[in-house]
Length: 200
Image (cartoon, rainbow, N blue to C red):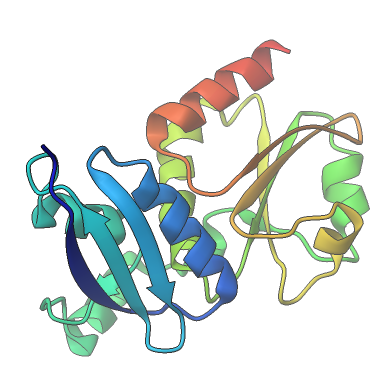
């Protein structure tokens, strides 16, 4: 007979309604999770789970994998983060070429290669995580595809293509949208998506 416990996870950086959808969707995929409820105002995640199937560490790890921090855990300080950023010497915006309203047609629609466009937001922790996973999964295919990124808070491209949440990935071939993936993807799902894309 399974039991049902409730655990509250207070988090930081839950700054947009889309966050709640992503968190609930991804946590609900875990075996042993019976229900997920979110209080957006107080930035709390309520997980109802079967402790005989899944434990707190696994739930914490999943939340952190989505890009959120738990308020009761110690992470690197602001100073440590500052040193790390200086050491890297780049911001996340330099990982992929940025696309704006004025150059979207030139860079994406007129591309001579398949073009993958990642719709993100500066307030989206999951976008940061997905961006890093995309770098890993797509690095060996850089000679076959162009990868771009656009911030929905600064552009209007999302309106034309009915992008309702972030992160969202759109694939364009010869100026037409051919494939779309919405939400968080792990490395294996990204590689599968890329393989099908390049084979089409």
